[in-house]
Image (cartoon, rainbow, N blue to C red; front, side, top):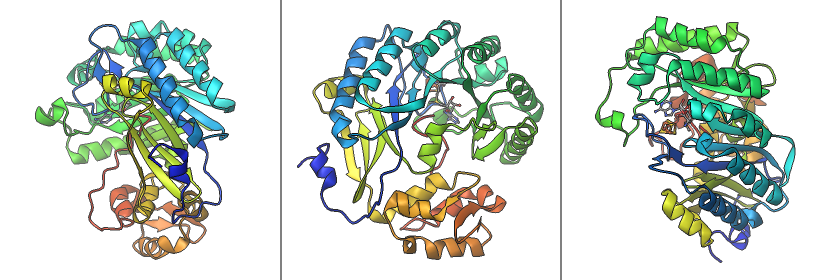
Length: 410
Ligand SMILES: C[S@@+](CC[C@H](N)C(=O)[O-])C[C@H]1O[C@@H](n2cnc3c(N)ncnc32)[C@H](O)[C@@H]1O
Ligand code: SF4
């Protein structure tokens, strides 16, 4: 029995999952025109034309090898992330979706999101992506301010960002705008102007991320001058107020949606659902009746292609240790503004309630949680000190907590 083989996952374990959670599919397309100085995603400058068809062959081989692990399970959402997936041709995306549909049962009205950058070259393809079967476009705008865009090394300008959102709005029923705040030199007035610009499009969904300086990025070694913590906190207050006034509900730390427009794919991550991740460096989490497994694919695109085509796309594959599951679950589920039903913990982890009950009570006593015993919901204080709240569920207290809110899906 070896990792990757279904017998390996089905051997006896210590968890008791009565039913498997909903399954999503994440597909990673790792190339960009230029590496942004703040970006720690598995993205690589394309340096010449990408060998699209070889990468699509590799994805298909990867998917084929993974099929026995998800046999018969319907797929509730697909997210094609990157990198810059919109650099792929519409024909390539159409082939990818056809390959997926031929192998996995997608639910009717399956949400299929594609991440796009706002360059002109990409914008011309939006309608063709829609025709290829993409239902939702997620546009990496970051800011509508030329100075800020330059300061964070983006290749597009504000006019292209506006044109891209207008085109997405015309071509897709549903779309998301990614913004970042606490940008170099940004003031509250600049932020207001960004929010004015974004909200003018009445976006069904907005993701707003605090710019973080990640290790191993250009900004980590060449840090720009950023707004201080007080200003950043005022900015977040402004974002929450203004999105609410525009009818967008903050349903997760960084996610704001109009009624009925929450991102189903990301919700599945936050509710500790399952996801198969294919493509260079993609992560996956898959549940079996007695264990939960995390997988990772080879990160380097050339290595990934060679390995996937040889039937060996996995670089890591290990069960989540039982002792780590409470924290893993809370790292996701406590990000949701409305929290979750306490029973979801047992359903999704296969652990008994006794694994968390004492900590839940303690968090309630400290004013960080409310709604117990049936529901688990962060109080405003708990939401403000989310990392501390999540860390209470660590099996080894004090282990470093990193929760940026940017998932596999971006
Ligand atoms: C997978 S990324 C990239 C999507 C697309 N390639 C782009 O850049 O437009 C998804 C989102 O994460 C956010 N992001 C990336 N790096 C970040 C950082 N260091 N701090 C905060 N947000 C970040 C950006 O808003 C970005 O649009
Ligand atoms: S932020 Fe987006 S466009 Fe920039 S390097 Fe990262 S994935 Fe590519």
